[in-house]
Length: 184
Image 1: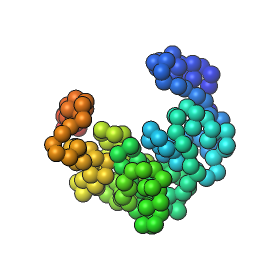
Image 2: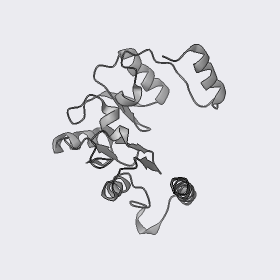
Image 3: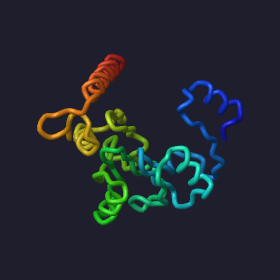
């Protein structure tokens, strides 16, 4: 649990538009028990009702108690953005279709880090970029880029681009170059 001093430091370090809220939850590793985008959050079935309400209020999302691929740790076994999502490889086709309908984004079953089904251990993604573990294969990266519509894979039809996409592309290119330079 975060101390009062830690919460105060976070609030003072972030813009006022960013809401910081402490959660008193028995299941304390929130990254493992929550998966969300800008509209929907999937949470562990055993999460406290109060925590569910805090997640809904602070993030401004609709919250659903869910398991993915037989796993209750939805944050570990499911990653999704506003563009698409990836779920545990043992998730049934019926469950993928149900989740896709609930989340209103296309989903695919997949892995990271040479076949790891723990997606949260090797994938961070938002609407315009992703970071994966060093062991992630080129095939896994290709699946990730396609389902999350990254690297122009799923840009507007007819060659049109959304405003700001070019700027985001430059940011991603610069970040990749910087990371490659650091790892070389």
